[in-house]
Image (cartoon, rainbow, N blue to C red; front, top):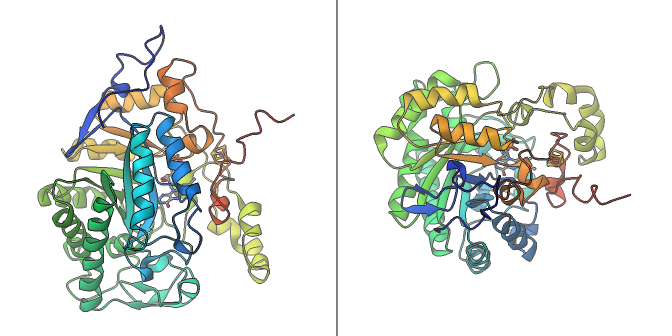
Length: 405
Ligand SMILES: Cc1cc2nc3c(=O)[nH]c(=O)nc-3n(C[C@H](O)[C@H](O)[C@H](O)COP(=O)(O)O)c2cc1C
Ligand code: SF4
């Protein structure tokens, strides 16, 4: 994955700017510093990897990103968010190989975001009980079981096996999801993890399972792929995982020596998702995705679930800067990056990579546009109406609107 490939060499273009220069990420080389963050694609009906998923990532690669991330591939069937989520398995391997080949053909690298949904799983849709550090109501409305020691070891093995499959499928990087209340982040959270055994209590105990899973992934992939984690800096809820512990956990990751970079995120899928997005809260559009009996309840309490947070460019930067000071691990800035100057500033400050989600849903070729010097800002307006489209094929609702009328 070498060679920039997106800079056109015109006056005012990105040639010579650090953000468009190649960089190493562990054992792999990336053609520039901008990667596509995971945005669940909604293109895996009943877990099948479709041409639509392949095309989605081919388009991102053709648009100039250094690496695109295939969102949320479950490490096991019980780790799916719902039955329309793909599992890394022998069954999906051939189609995933097709996907990675398509991305490589367009000159980019490709990462697999892997995880176990834990409390975020819709257990009714999955047909299996949700699991969690401690017994608690899951997102699917059923009671999640507290994991036993055997369950933790079984899921650690699932991470190992899933990572091996991802490498065989041709992924260049594995991103282990340690955020947003998914299983490993729920172990980190003092609000969700009430265990009294060696997997709960003080941070060193709550960190054991995430570190064990990350270590298993590294053992499985060796230097055949890069390994990143997507880590919450703050859950954005009272008594959740917060900056002080997240910084300490980054230190543990650094001592462990298994990961090549940390992508910094925040927010709680269960209690405060808008903390992670900022901008308009798409309450009406979200309500429309719910079964009729739940819509009334959402009308009453939806404002508390989808809260209002004003959008600011690079809203996580003040928290992320603290990691730059505390760890020497390479860092990936994420959250509200919409301007070339922001990406350039981040690289100049010391972030190894900049990840973008919505800006690239809006304009998959934004990196090429920046590199050619045609614009220095993206067109995403942070309306967040793309979020409820994850149930019907993730898309920016404004794509095509430019041409209409
Ligand atoms: C439609 C949509 C789907 C998303 N799905 C995922 C996902 O599957 N996994 C994940 O870690 N983050 C997911 N995210 C969050 C993004 O990775 C990113 O953290 C967030 O959008 C903030 O970055 P941005 O301001 O560049 O969009 C999603 C975001 C959007 C807009
Ligand atoms: S729908 Fe489009 S414009 Fe609105 S937040 Fe999503 S990507 Fe941005």
